Image (cartoon, rainbow, N blue to C red; front, side, top):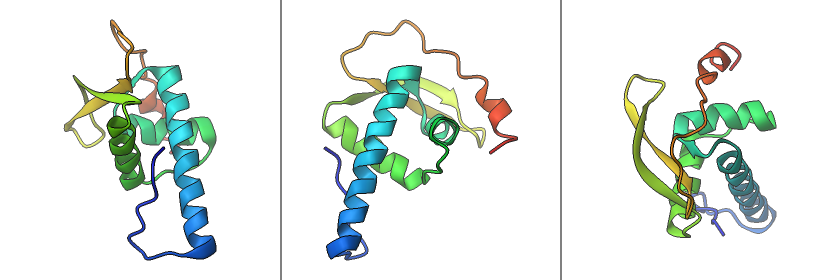
Amino acid sequence: MTEFYNTISASGKQLATGTKIVKTQSEKLLELFDKYQRLAPYQIEKLYFEEFGEHILVGSIAGRLTDMTTEGLIIKTDKLVMGNYGMPQHTWQLAGIEMPEPIDVSFLTELETKY
């Protein structure tokens, strides 16, 4: 599955911990895609906290999306949503699934006050 990008030259227990975190993040992202269908990175960041009570770094989201796309688990779509900085963001969805429209996640704006 996805890999830990060892840019800090970790070894031993530290490397094992980093690898375990990446695997767990990927599994949780797949759960989010299964539940919410089509998501943009900013939506993943907010839903990850709401669903799992944990923060995830934007860089980690990007890494997982890249790895999971390369592995054929998810696909990048041509659907754009407005991101949290007023700029459009691409969305991703599970591979091999035809979706008419994504599930409404407009409630995320309400979460921004809690986050």
